[in-house]
Length: 171
Image (tube, rainbow, N blue to C red):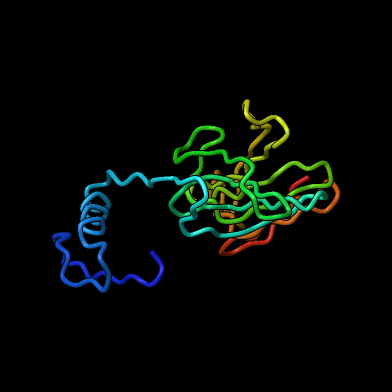
């Protein structure tokens, strides 16, 4: 939580904290170290969002990426409309949504950084499955899904993706 500070020892024991959330932070630290951490997605609450995109109607799509692993749609007045995505590797799942953009048709392009892919969604298909397509991000001079998307832009039929060592165009 913003404004809170916790200091943990290597064994995940809370050493110091500046808020009343000590038990919660201890539980989180232990589960992160054990590899069992699952974020608690909360309707109306963000957890380290990474990027935003707007559609032609003024709706905002938020990559709530590091911990909640989801896309959130908010109307032009800031009211929550819908959300989709969970943590994982399957279509419609994410592992660090790092960037988001949209095209003129309203499709949403998500840079799924740790899964090293771009996923494309049609948000008008919600609440059913909005997934349309995905493809690997390939780093310069490498093969396979080697790139991690950190930025994305769509212009016409071209999708531009940036990563640690590259700027690549997909069409």
